[in-house]
Amino acid sequence: MTDPANTTMAAPRTEIYADKDQLVTVVAERLLAVLVDASRHAGIAHAVLTGGSAGIAVLEKVADLVTEPGTETPAWTTVHFWWGDERLLPSDDPERNAMQAHTALLDLLIAEHGLPAENIHRMPTSEDAATPEIGAEMYAASLEVHAEEGGRAGLALPRFDVLLLGVGPDGHIASLFPGKASLNTEGVVAVGEDDSPKPPPQRVSLTFDAIHSADRVWTVVVGADKATAASRALAGGTDPQEIPATKVRGARETIWHLDQAAAAKLR
Image (cartoon, rainbow, N blue to C red; front, side):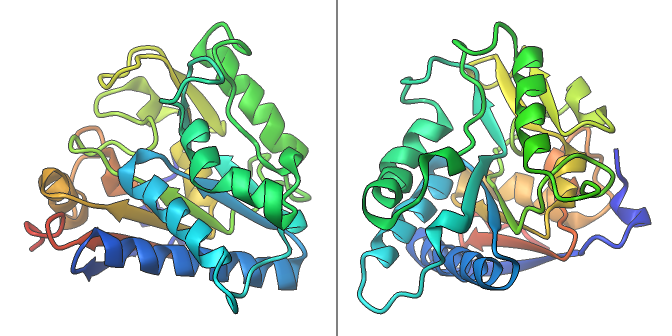
């Protein structure tokens, strides 16, 4: 696993907001701005989405913004959406991050704004993959198809302009949980989890190596139940085996967006 202390990855900075609504609005506006910039200057944009109440609220706010007159939006034909993790469930299960994202934003972009359906790269379902390990291999193959020339950080990955992450009360990110073998996975972009402590047990996740390759990594952390995990993750010297979120880093930018409740125990 790449060690942030021995790389040029961006040190985290924290931004604290009065409440969830303010946080979600800022992140949604920033997400749109990054996509606009990447679309205009690189001709392609890749964003990695997250689930959870705050992650989905960001997408709902983006949906509001794109319907407002005067909002600058990217050329949606150039935008690709990926996921940091997913539950290995049937395709129509409402617990899947992809299903929630479609309801919040993606269906609107396809129907009214020209986003090609093939630009949405969902992680495998339980109908696609018999095991999380197979699902991880399948997602790695999808990522490789869109990898930038020569790979990204030594891996077959597209250039992720921005990668969103939630943080669990136990300090997990994506589906990388405390004490799990997936925390030590190196040299691959996706990993399967057979025994998640948070149901459902079977999941697919990007690895730390893949997360660290993203230009920008942004957390969205809301609620008092996240305060201890956020404090420990940002304190320095915390063991990632105990609080995986302490290894959150982006290649160019790392921002922790927290509401007042989640930031209550920061030193």
